[in-house]
Amino acid sequence: MLQEQQELKAQDQSIEAKTYVSLDGDLKADEADPQPKKHGDSGFRIPEDTLISSIPGPKALTLRGVVFDSRGVVTQLDQEFQRAQICAENTLQPRDLRKLDTSLGDQSQVILVRDKAIVVNLSHVRALIRADKVIIVAAPTSDSSETAQQQSAFIYELQGKLQAPKDSTVFEIKVMEAILSSVAYGLQQELHEYEKEASDLFVSLDESVDDEKLKELLLLRRSYIKFLQRVEVLNNDEDMAGMFLTDKANGIPRITSDHMEMELMLEHYAKLGDELVMRITETTSNLRTTQQMIGVSLDHTRNQLI
Image (tube, rainbow, N blue to C red; front, side, top):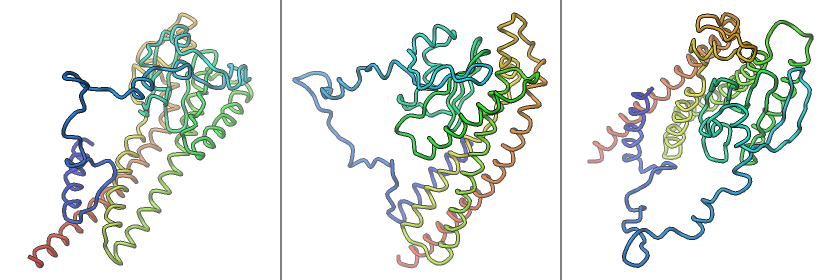
């Protein structure tokens, strides 16, 4: 993956130089401030508004969400929680809770297994799972309407699964299965849109090549590589054994090798993830090949002009 990203960066720079395409996020040397602003004769002068904005307000110290108990009953709706209290009650570190606090800009896809809780941030789902309840963290207002709709649909599906006739599956496994099912469906839909976009771009490039299409090609390939990083399923023995919070709460934690129930549940989603990875890899390869062919064509045209 690292080699793919390095190769992409090098090719981006090469094609940008040949076509004078300015990509979003690329900082040119002449755009940087050559001289830092100073106050008096020493130190950097930090703007006053920056100092004010860096002070955490009341909202930064809380999380808002919906709470379901083990029977699927909503016990708290649109409730505001103090982050310090959540950390204390669930033996979490503040850095663990940052994974749920999207206002801090941390968008990493992660499943953190801790002693009393599982912290989940996958696609449109942000949740804190305990042995007896789950907090579904509300989508921030900055998220797209599509993300908010996906989260609303997930909450409805989760409630239905938790209120279904009782079976032997422990609460936390039911919640994890509902999360993975919702995320997998969302990724499938998103990949379908990406594939359609790539197909349309290939057809367009066959007809003609211009700066705008090259920019679209580069950005689409970057999107594919970022998307690939999101299609990763947890596959760690220690983490899977640690997910059985109910057993740990009852004083009978499972050994690392004793996680057959979790492993069988994850196997389906792991296979689905593999299929998505294959489709993403194939399209990414086609994008890379197209990018290289265009680069060769541009080299040839430039040599002719010289």
